[in-house]
Image 1 (cartoon, rainbow over the protein chains, first blue to last red):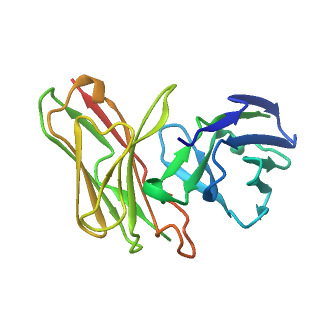
Image 2 (cartoon, rainbow over the protein chains, first blue to last red):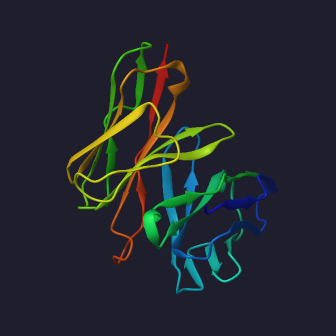
Length: 115
Length: 115
């Protein structure tokens, strides 16, 4: 069964720092990987989607990379701001068998950016 | 913009009641999902629907059932609510896994309290 792990579980940084969130997965048979943001008490907002054939995706200050063969993805946040404070989750989408299309989530990294 | 709408944001129900949680998406997505989210346990998949009238059990289907009679609507049913079903419920939808633009979108969540 696919297992998704996110490290660290929590991170607290001062404003302006560049930071890296890590995601690893045990089964490389994925169709894509998606990073989400969740604010307290709210649903998940999609940040970036990387197809399995891609190496990275960028959106503004966010850059996500994918190394499918080693089962790793990183989310890089440049020049962090207090508004970036949230929980960040990664999810992989299965590409085969009875689990085709199913999403597997990590537990998330809770980020706090203080002024 | 894609919209996934969960009809009830906050509900309080009594033990033993039958509870319906409704989710509607407006983007003709084939796949729809129901998750519950609890502190320390992350997101856990309850049911997954590939397409209309199709469903697959997730990791924690016990005590729940689902209905997908129309493509845009995926309903989660708690046959006889119990206090251990107090949780936040999240609905999500997306295109079939090998489609272009297969980002997964989430609703805002439904907070259910069973007393």
